[in-house]
Length: 195
Image (cartoon, rainbow, N blue to C red; front, top):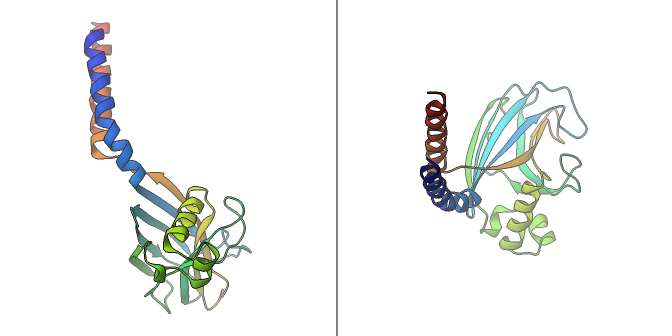
């Protein structure tokens, strides 16, 4: 029995090694934006639960938003605050082709972080002047919760809703498979012990 458990543990470790490397490459980032999350806070009922996927140099954005009190004028990622989940920062990445003049909608876009034109020129200049250094600063800020999504409207020109970006790795399917196998193995062992 112990030998079977050891073999199962070794197989799980071998299968998880590439999954850990993949999880470091692919990261899901969430930003829950609201009026009370703005600086200064406001009473907007607007909200967004945005998802970003970082895959190498590509940052894919899926930003649904609703119930804004004003019509949208712009949206962007701001970076980098001096402390996690607080403060204000300049624009890092303006959202091109963001739906304007609406109170609800969805924005989908893929940003190539290796392209200098993706960044606000002031952000690019402040962080080394190259897309590589700007990208490194942005990713570090996301990992430290010092970057945020901001949606501006005509009623709230400084921002109607805001949400800090929080990163979490994506487990690979192989990781979930090995977890399921391990749990099943433990369940069988517990069942045999009871019998």
